[in-house]
Every structure is written in C-alpha cells, then in structure tokens.
Amino acid sequence: MTNNAQKPDTPPPMAGMDHAAMGHGAKSSFDHAAMGLGAKSVDHAAMGHAPQGGGADAGHGDMVADFRRRFWVCLVLTIPVLVLSPMVRDFLGQGMAPLFAAEEWVALALSSIIYFWGGWPFLTGALPEVRSGRPGMMTLVALAISTAYFYSAAVTLGLPGGEPFYWELATLVTIMLLGHWLEMRSVLGASRALEELVRLLPDTALRVKADGGTEEVPVAALVAGDRVVIRPGAKVPVDGTITEGTSSFNEAMLTGESKPVNRTTGETVIGGAVNGEGAVTIEVKATGEATYLSQVIAMVKAAQNSRSRTQDLATRAATVLTWVAITVGLGSFAYWVWAGESVTFALERMVTVMVIACPHALGLAVPLVVAVSTSLAAKNGLLIRDRAAFERARDLNAVVFDKTGTLTEGRFGVSDIVMLEGGDEAAALRMAASVESQSQHPIAQVSRSP
Image (cartoon, rainbow, N blue to C red):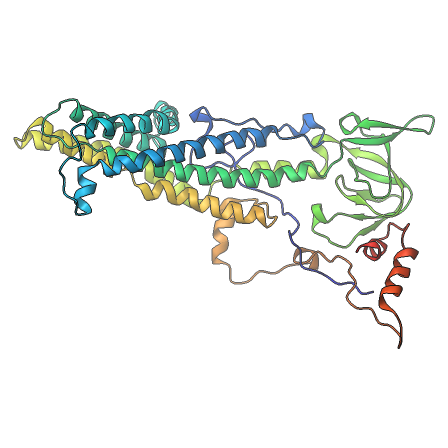
C-alpha cells in the first residue's frame, strides 16, 4: 500500500471568520441589534467547550427566516403595486389611464403593508443612528421610504396635483430586504463553521481518581493538574502533557497537519485532537479559555468585528448621502416655492430628491459582496481572520503554501495492489483486512474500509 494524498472534500479550517452583528457574528453592513433583532451569543466558557445544540444558530436562523419571510411577502405585494403604477405602465407603453377607479386606494393598502411591516427593520434601525448623530444606511433607507410613503398617502387622500411614489417605495423596501436576507444567510453559514470548532471537544472526560480508578466527568469540571485517560479513537478534551503512554494524534482540524503526529511522555497534546492507536494519560495544563482551541475561537470572534474597506466606504457614503438628501431636498423645496411654484409642486420635487438619493445598488451590493465571499469561504472550510485582509487578497499575484496538509488531506489509501502471476487481488485484500482488523493504526483503518 502507498500513501495516496487525496484532495479534501473540505480543507481544514483556518482561524478567523467574519460575521459580527449578531451575537457571535460579523459586523455586517447593518446593525441587527439596533433593529431589535439581536441573536443570542455563544458562551464557550460556560459550555466548557462542550458542543451545545444551537443557541446562536437558532437566533441567527430565526433572523434569517424573518427576513426571508418579509422579502417574499413584500415581493408578492410589489408586483400588483407596479401594475397599479401609472408611471410604470406608461414606461411599458401601456399608457397612464387608471385600470379601475380605486386603484390608488388598493396601491395605498398594499404599500402600507410593505412600509410598516416590510420596512420595520429599517425604521427601527434608523433610531440609534439618529440618536448618535451618525446617520447611515438605515437612516437613508428609512428617510427614503418614509418620505415616499407619507407623500404618496397624502396624494391619495386628496393632496392636489401630486403623483404617488408607491412603486418606488415597494421596490426599495423589497430590494433592501433581499440584500439583508442574503447577507444574513451567508453569515449564518459562516457561524455554523465556527460552531464546528466548538464541537471538536467531547462533552465528558475520564478523570483519574486518587485511588487510581477512573470516573467520567463533564469537561467543564476539569481543572489544571487533573489526570485524564484518553482511549484509542477518543478526542482529547483539554490541552495537557502526556504522563503515561505513547500514541499518534490527528490534529488536522486544528493545525492543518494531515498526517497523525506521534506524541510520547512529556509532550503536549491539544484539546480537540483525535487519539490514534494507543491509550495515554495526560495531565491537564489548560482548561476553558486558556486552551489552544479557545484561543482560536477568541481570535475568530475578535476578527468578526473587523470591517472591510468596502463596508466602511459604503457606511461613509450612506452618511454623506443622508445629509445631501436632506439638504438638497429642503433646498429644492425652498427654491421652487421662491420661484413661484405651488407648495404641492415644490413638495413633489423635494420628495423626488429624497427618494432618488437612496441608492438601491448601494444597499444590495455590499451585502452581496459579504454574502458571496463569506459563504464561499465557509463552504470550503476557511475561517477568515480579517475581512479587510481578505478583501486585499484580490491583489495577490502568488500564494505560497508551507505544508501538504493545507492543500490535501494526506489520507492513506490503497492506490495499487501488485500481485504475483495468478494471484487473487480480492483474496489478498481480504487477508490484509483480517490481519489489521483490531489495529487502530491509520493504515489499518484504510485496510478495513470497503
């Protein structure tokens, strides 16, 4: 048998991932907490690094489902709003004649649902920005949809000479919800990749008692100085030093080193590594947040607060656009009134400026960039340490990898069977498997595989 280094289905993860705004997540382009949609965070210390089902994932999943539901409902309602818009019909060459007498009232009813229900995350998200005196994308979106809605409603209710903006309101809310949903869905996927790190550790450990016996205890109950028995095939619960025994350890999920590493008395083992063929006893050196895996997770969580240059640029652009929209909108109103036009005419121009100032593309482009990059990275086992650095990677001309395990799994496999003339390959393989049936050695495990 030869060592057949196979390409991995999922490369070993690399420290760092990017999703802050949601508890254990990335600082996304919107502030989820400000919107009253904050998710629960994962308390790794309280968990004792034991895998716990879903708290944060559940919180993230609820938010993703909420935005997905809002998007699809608003999309369905937007279609009739577009059909009922004279401007849209005129653009499509259908003329501006009303389809029926009460079409504006129907458009108002549908738009009210879109504004108050679909736009609720943006309306609530704008409040903290306004209070802090730093308007951003949420304020810009809230300003645009509020101006469009209340002006259009006033026209429908009798304001003379105006043209409603229901279709602009509907499309803006729907597109912003789409961007938000895509971003949060990708963040959830990356969040699950981080949770996989936590699941590397077992729930319990075999602690050696004073009389030499063993007892099964929760990993969280271990303290420095305790001795723990690691059986063949078991995961190492905490960082420690081997006091008895020799074995090989698979540390691929932690270090990227695909080949099992031999460890003997006096050497350190890492929590989360998988023991190979021999039973060993270790003395606990680090627990909780002091372990190697905890430090990786802490580094990842710290990196999650990083923002890319694109996001910072979008945030600054949204702030500038908010003030420009307000200033130019009010200036436009004042100018047309001064020029002798009616208040209705001037008001319509002011609303037009404020609605146009909210760029649909800006609200959709940044979430899409975050969604695509984060999702692709998470699916391929990459945990991004720094989003800004990840963004700068587009300028790389060459990448140097320092070990085979980064690109291949290096798993043992049977590449060829060489037999003497007249030999039976199947019989030889069966005999090899029977000889290795009780062994925990990596090659023996390959021999026993189908």
